[in-house]
Length: 155
Image 1 (cartoon, one colour):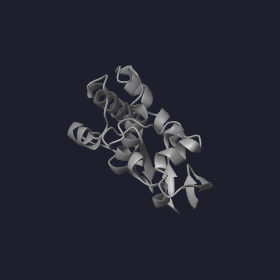
Image 2 (cartoon, helix red, strand yellow):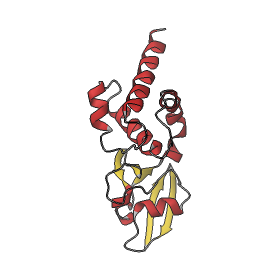
Image 3 (cartoon, one colour):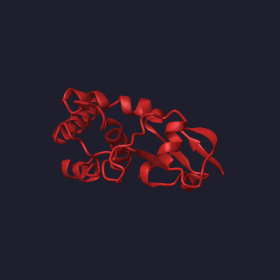
Image 4 (tube, helix red, strand yellow):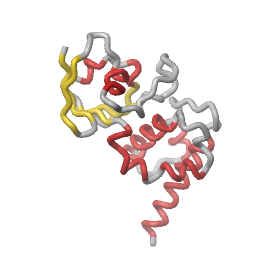
């Protein structure tokens, strides 16, 4: 079957089997930031934005994206560049495997709530698994980014 969607701002057409997962379709399109981690929809590594809402592409059939706008980290490089350094500065990307999921969910969070509290950040990112850092580094990095953004606005 043919799948028509907008992938990272580009109209895209692909041929899929009825049981093709969205994650597999994206990887076939060269979107290697979309990763397979747990195979149980529990780690967040496969997060993409479908019509600007985070979804787990490992548990969604590609056919469900028909006619939709889907964005992977490849399509958000400029937006992500604003804060990923802050996460790295906190030592929160020890192995880096979980970063794409965290970045995608952080972008979605900040679009929805530009000034979240620490508790709101924790709640929004709760579906992301990080086996290296214990999550506090990501929180500190996001908080440092928000603080620097607020400071720049005051200057």
